[in-house]
Image 1 (spheres, helix red, strand yellow):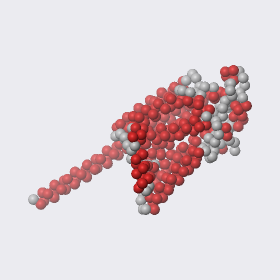
Image 2 (cartoon, rainbow, N blue to C red; image 1 turned 90 degrees about the horizontal axis):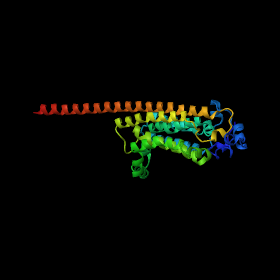
Image 3 (cartoon, helix red, strand yellow; image 1 turned 45 degrees about the horizontal axis):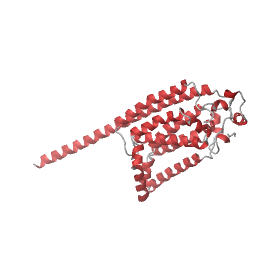
Image 4 (spheres, rainbow, N blue to C red; image 1 turned 30 degrees about the horizontal axis):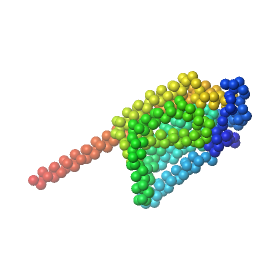
Length: 330
């Protein structure tokens, strides 16, 4: 099994040669040649053969899964039920989705191919957070924690900071602005050169997605939730954002990351073609997730309306029964 240790989470990412052949005419340095020799061409097989399980994120994922399953076990011991679908959502597409792009072979190539990085971006910020929210882990924690830890958790959830960051307009602004701040500044190049910044961006993607989608779905008791019309409107507004961002990446006349990708000297990848592919992934993937999420919100809205209509019908039936009983006694 081949591993590119220099760009794995366990070590610093590969650094291009001090001067690239694209700008000085000098051939790439030994580090670049080593990268080409060590990394096979990207393929579906490489996603599995280049997997790394020795990162801090892998440990965190295992810990999160263990705590969630322990909470479900605690509920069952006292005779309470927990929906199996929530467990599947949280462990499968939720934590499993994060693992599929951070501890698999995709992590090996995410500093070599912008398209691979965009796949990570989509999963970490848009797909996995939705399923983590559908798992309702905060509700599970509140139902299983002892009194003192439960009060502390509620204090954090309803703190001033939590109220600000989970307020829909603030969460939406963070969700929209972050990609532009990352890709259209020198920050993206910095994340390619430094392992700690690279890992921090992964964590930031997850947190940004959770802050945006968690209040949207509304399963956990979070502050600042809007009614369904407001949530649907915000989701609708996110659709053109992904179109603009994806098309901008595809049509850019400069390479993201500067000379980073050309200086790697990969004979099996063209940085310009890969950047066009990356923009297409961001555009199509973002629109698909946004439209799907909008459909989910509409369905939830309709179900809530049906529940409210049934509640009103029951209340009217009770009032009518009381009125008949009162008339019968007179």
